[in-house]
Length: 202
Image 1 (cartoon, rainbow, N blue to C red):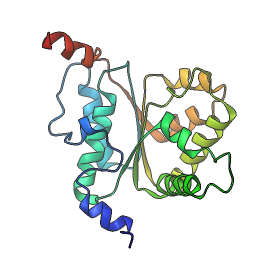
Image 2 (image 1 turned 180 degrees about the vertical axis):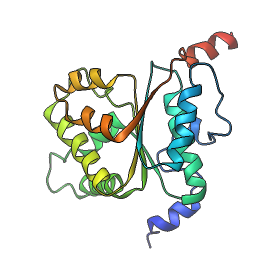
Image 3 (image 1 turned 135 degrees about the horizontal axis):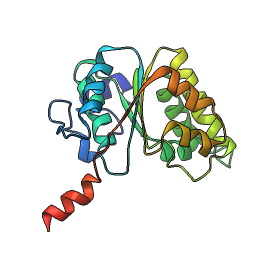
C-alpha cells in the first residue's frame, strides 16, 4: 500500500522540502531589522495578492528564512506548498543516462509534477547553480516558470543576484524579464546573519 500525497500533506506539519532550521519560521516570528522591514511588508502583501515575489540580497541576509516564513504561514491554512533549492532541483530534473532507470525516472516525474502543479513553490537560490548558465538550466527554469504562470500558480524566488545579474549570467533576458513583469522585487540589505550570530556565540 502506498499513501497518496493528499494524505501525506495532511500529516506533514510543514511544506515539503523546507529546510530543518526554518520549519518553525512564520511571518509572526520573523525578526524585523532595518534592512529587512520593507521585504517583510512585501511578504505579507504577497499572501493577499496575486503577483509573484523575488527576494534578493547578499548571502546570509535572511532571504530563505523569509521565503520559508511565507510558505509556512500559507501552509497552515492551505496544507499545500513546496520548497526547492534551485541547483539541486536542476540536478534532479536531469534525465537519467540509462533510459531504463525506472527509479530515477519516477523521481524526475514526481518533481516535475509538483513544480507544475503545486499552488505555491519557493525556488531558492536562483543563480547559485553555476557561474554561467547552460542551455539546460536556461530551458528548464524558463519552462517551469512559464508552466506555473500559465496555470495561475504562485512562485517565490530568492537570489543573491539582481535581475540584471541573472540575465547576464544566463546570457538570456527571458527569465529575468518574466520575473520583472510578474513579481514584486524586494531587497534585503542586512549583513550575513549567520556570521553575525557566530560572532555573538563566541
